[in-house]
Image (cartoon, rainbow, N blue to C red):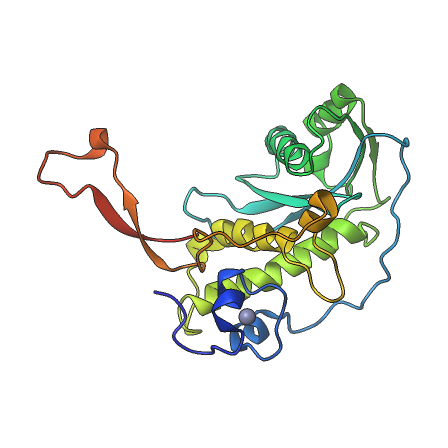
Length: 255
Ligand SMILES: [Zn+2]
């Protein structure tokens, strides 16, 4: 399936989830939001204790139900390296948000070489998903939970900035895998994860990648870093094959 049109960005650009944004690439332009939010100066949010992970989190959605029926995404961004991870939610319930948040924090700690480091501060807006069980989780982690003082207030710059970047990238990769004629809406969460993976790893002239900040060297592309939506073959487990006549691999699309 891959891109057959709009090659301005080149193969590497396509394999990097259309990051960074390239105005010469038609899919990037298709992905850019119609109304750009006013550019805000990056600002420090709320200071927490000196040591520990300082995180911002924000929801997006609802989206059309995707492959596994997720309808919201939850983004978690770390202040120090700006490393982000995204997950899916089937509802705005705080228990679900807390469980997914906990897992994303684990991945961020691992990815930024800070396994075992405590969470010092969590910054969110005041949506219901960040109350109840989510508040309890913050207390359990020993983290200070700071809010923006109003539902959908705009003072969560880090979380919102990442959501905006990821959504632009998502539109580009979804447009690119159909040659711009439509979207595979069921793939939005897979696409978001893919784009965030690359936003973490791609430096631009304006911005050093989170990966570089953590590891002090640029990410080197792996031969298994494929373009989103490319045709690939995946192996079928023996126990999932009805009999020996069933092929050992099936075609699928990469994401
Ligand atoms: Zn592009």
